[in-house]
Structures are given as structure tokens and as C-alpha cells.
Image (cartoon, rainbow, N blue to C red; front, side, top):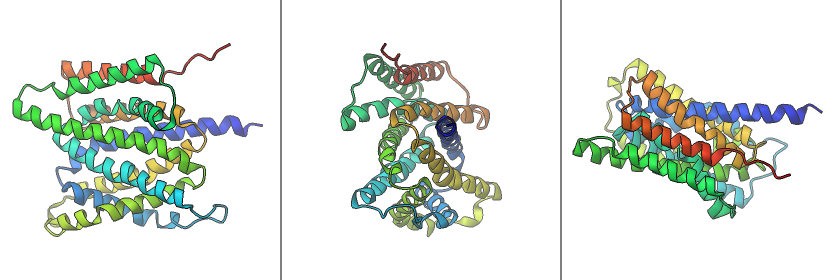
Length: 300
């Protein structure tokens, strides 16, 4: 039969497209945080996506009702993967750069490996440990790349927040695999977005009451629309669709496209430039990704 052959490649394409799109909006969010306050931006994102995915909330006739375990998983998937990831990423990018975000996000596969060891009791190979060390080295190098003390302090805090976003994304990968066995990708996308909207609404309303929406240019609104649909709807659906057919350990390999896409967006779209330290940090981080995700040779 050809279906088992076709589905993995379509799943791989879904995973790759999801992470590349995440990386692009991580980079472009640098522009949005200059226009909108952080919590208002997150609230508008979840609100726009909730309208777009209203038809995805209802359970299909082929799905089983949500168990209590699935409901908790959906909440924590949204809390870490949507709410905390968005807050850490947006604050982190506002204090740092899209390029630095790309370097730090390269630590996601290593974080997934660590969490697999902690929560799934998987053994971590020595080369994976070396990859984790490379990723940490890249993060440390980019954190102290600037010479200005005040700017360095702000950049360090921003990079720590981006590191928090890495841990949130790794949690999202580990928990997502369990959900795809019982809930459709579309419904997962819609439900975790609604949880994100509920969590951020008090803070979003607080900032909305003091914000002058008349000062926002039309281009910013279009960018916000892209960010909302891409971040909450398309990337989640693509990722959950691929994750349904691919093991979580294999899916982690595709997170390499997130930092590459974020860094490429920073350089090609936002006009950011590589310094020697940033180039070295990025190379070190990508070396860690290769070591951590390179498939092992099967035993004879």
C-alpha cells in the first residue's frame, strides 16, 4: 500500500512548514512589539485566531469525548505552548533581537531531549549531551556579545526570557504527542487557543483601555493579522497534523527550522547584521542541534 509511504512525507512537510513559519513570526514580532504593548498584542492574537477557528471547536462524530486527562493536557499545552511562550518570546524579542532569538531557539531540540529524559525516562546519548553543551555555549556567547553595560543587562534579561520560551516550546512538543492520539489537530488548535485567550484576557483588557488604537498604521494591522493566523492557527494545525504520524523524538529534529527561519527573517527582512560573536554563537548552537538530532545508526 502507498498510504504508509505518503503519509510520513506529508507529515514531515507539515512539521517543517510549521517550524519555518514559527521562526518567521518570531522575527517579525520584533516589529509588532514596537507598536502594541505585549499583553495587548497577545490578547489580539488569540482573539483574532478564536474568530478564525470558531468552526474547529466542535467535536466531530468520529472523536471520543474529552477525558479529564485530555482536558488537563489541553490546559497545560496552552499555558506553556501558547500563553507563557508568547509572553516570554515577545518580551524577550523586545529586549534583544530576532537574530539572538534565532540562536537561543536553536536550543529547543536539546531542551526536548532533556525533558524526554526527565518525564519519559529516555536515555540521553553522549553526543546528545555534547549537543546540549554546544547549545548552552551558543546561548551564553550571544548573551554577552554586546559591550555596552546597560544594553548588555537588557539583552541578558531578554535572552533569559527567550530561554524560557525554549523550555515552553519543548514542553509543547512533549505534551502534544499525547494529545494527537485522542483529539483532532484542528480541535487541539482551537481549544488551546481559547485557553490562551482566557489566560491573557485580564492583562490584555487592562492595556487595551489605555491604548490609542488610532495611532496604528494599516500595515501594522495586516502584520498583526498574519501573526495571529500564523501563530495560533496555521502553525499549530500543521504541527499537530505532522505529530500525529511522527514520533516526538523525530519531530524534534524539525525544530531546527525555527531558529534558522528567525535568524533569516532578522537579517533579510529587518536588516539585522551578524557580528563575529553572533556568527560564532549561531554556528555553535547549530552544531548542538546537529549533534542532538542526528539519527543514530541502527544496530545490525
